[in-house]
Length: 352
Length: 113
Image (cartoon, rainbow over all chains, first blue to last red; front, side, top):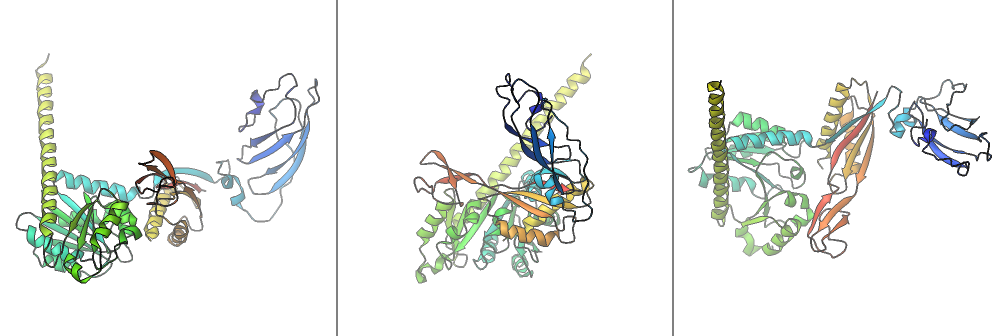
């Protein structure tokens, strides 16, 4: 029977010879090759069926044509003698796999159906789980090089370190300059050099977490590689991506690099102390960013002058508080669950 | 241009599957890349060739199935086709279009022997 059209068992209806005319159908052979051919009409009231010719393609890629006669039954075999050409190329591309049909040749298709980023995402999920379990609030800071990320981090840390525990991961292609700048503030920092890489990934951050051992209920800051393109796609397990745009760049950057502004949920407009000397339109920059991501939260700051920093710092502290209470709730819920299970166990043990 | 690390991730998935299936060689890799996924198929091809060198997938053919971009336009209240992320709605010109399809980056299947 033809496994594609099933014409051998009644799917092609032959109503008293009326429909026994010419028809075309497709066969799949056991070796996985597919071919189409047409039948000539059967003479009415007889079961003498038409003759047809068709072309086979063999698993080795060679083709040949042959004719045969049907006996009225729609299912038919294709046994026939023929010789294979000797020599020639073995081109499996034209074989069963080229047609995407798993056949009986030695090659076969294997379904994977996995997201390309699934590996990264599983590392990121593990990181996030770790952060949540320990009440850690994690931020991933992204921007183009030179937007003032490190200076902003240094100023943020200086103002917060008295009130909360902080650890920092610094991503750059080369040098440990940034980590040294952070360490000078007195908090723990780890430099990741990505070498050829253009972004941090979930695995790198997981290793950094293992090395840094951030404290319970602490702030974990990740300064990504300066790049407005690639880090957008890689989840690190952070709670928020914070994109930093400085007023010495163009107002249209959110439109030029929309992926990053869409991936972020907070945008800091940095170097605002320079606005009087530039033609930068801060409102336009924010409008452009809102166009690609209506849900963005904005802060206008200057790391150098300190202007606008209190609002940004308050946002961080609120985030950390929320993270702590979420964990406390989880801990409370777990405790209640343990108590309930203990009661159940006691009842079981006390039972008959 | 993170196609290089994406290509590495593809190779990782392919190698894992090939080892599990005890394959000698990978002949074909089929990817599904959405139009809104920000992956350039040409760059992916270039990187795939580079990262598969000296691997079990060396010389494997790369087939990229590009899936169409779809979005939901809030003002129109309708699903619209999108050629690029962040494009305006082709019906009303609004930018309030939420991408709903065509963001995938998947390894669909491989052919091994």
